[in-house]
Image 1 (cartoon, helix red, strand yellow):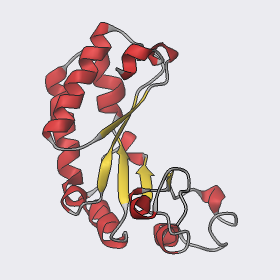
Image 2: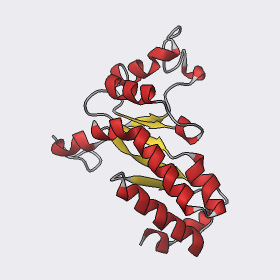
Image 3: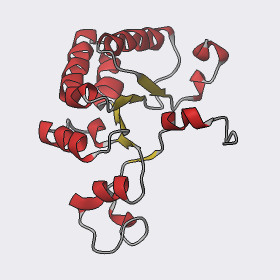
Length: 174
């Protein structure tokens, strides 16, 4: 097989493609057929569209139930990865206060909820999406270091989305 976008045949299984969310009313009639219930959208997403990854966004606002996590685990195919958006308690609220013990607790609580997916090999990582007001500063770099350590202690990869251009400098990526 020819190289396509830098992936050879042996590496294609490492390519994960999905969307940011899957359950949107305006997708009915466009992405999903008319009349498809909300409860069947995820099954359609994985079986018909054959996506093998999903960014779960609602976790920014609220914690998923154990039932939801088990359902994701059970209903997703073997080679499927979930990326969960970190709760705003971690990316928006606590960093402003500088309460690192609270942050550590929130990270631990979040990772415990996601443990079934991690154990099942389907937790691809956590997205830390910071607000525009999270500017590049020594204090915020220290915050990222502490948060990164807490997630690494949980053996979970993190992905960071900066919304402030101040992070777009070479030192950020070194």
